[in-house]
Amino acid sequence: MVSPLSRNALDRSLPWRERTPAHPCFCANSTPGFAPYTPDGCDNGQACYWYSQGCSIGCPKCDHKNGRLQIDLCGLGKHATINEPLLRTVNRNATAGSEFDIYKHNPWRAPGTAPVADACGLAGGTPWGANVSEWGDYVATPYAHHGDYGSKVLSRQQTGAIWKRGTQQEVMWQITANHGGGYQYRLCPASEPLTEQCFARTPLEFVPKQALQWSNGSRTPVNGMFVSSGTFPPGSTWAMNPIPPRCLSTCETGNCCSRANTCRPCGNNQTHISKPDCTTCDNTPDPAFPPPCDETGRPGLCSGNQPSRWGSVSVVDVVRIPAALSPGAYILGWRLDCEATAQVWSNCADIVITQ
Image 1 (cartoon, helix red, strand yellow):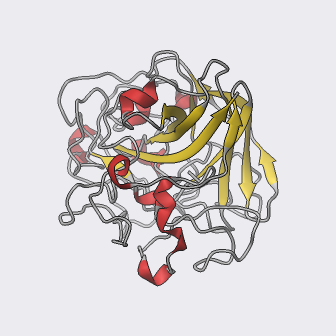
Image 2 (cartoon, helix red, strand yellow):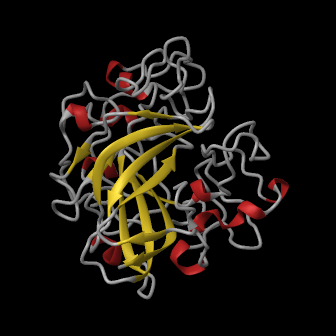
């Protein structure tokens, strides 16, 4: 989450050398040159390294290890509820539920039903500092270290977000590694424990005014895709990630990457059981679905694994604040349910609701 500023970005004030992950957490704003590690965008600390992994739909808990093992990790047999190709963000040509529909157990395929390690994210995706299977490793700082639970260690951050109940408010997030899927914003009173149960009580409705924001401050309106059937909480609205990954859309053909030496081919459940997916590959000819902007002469402008080849881009949404909310301090939760991996990204931000 880029705006409001999340608690997960609490290390943004530290010199970059003191928090040097291999891949920085990009974010687009209207202040070119603000970040020390890229010529455009802004500094979002290590906010993009708070996530849960090994989380299949319908399972009671995450195993913290198998983010890319395309199976039902708990064996309870939960069926996907998002099967319409237009709402799927990867591997759209595979028949839903078939052996070639290898992502059917991952969080986006039944939004909100996969467990998480923590509603505000787990630093580095595992509760231990060793045996880390992802490049999303959280670099220790004076504020947090790998394995910390966001709801326990992240302190209040001044965001300046003061929202009147019954109004529409703008929110923003950004991709660092594109695993498809979709997301939801929700609220929990700051006075209560920050749990999934608390956030699930107040999911926010989207106003269909989605846009892409570039680092020069300009915006491109896009036609967002929203779904409220087959979601949890029942009837709550989720937004599909509008940035298409590249390479995953051809998994059903058995070759999802043009650079065979860097990506392994994807196959059916049996051949894919112990292989990683191909999300590290972002330069194949075709995106998983039509990009939301004109990429003529600039392939990857708004598609790919890390859509920053031409500069950072953020996804802007408008949410409706319930009119019946009691005034006071709240935590805004952002939850991204991935489709290409058994992973969920979570950030939390401080806001104030007024009458």
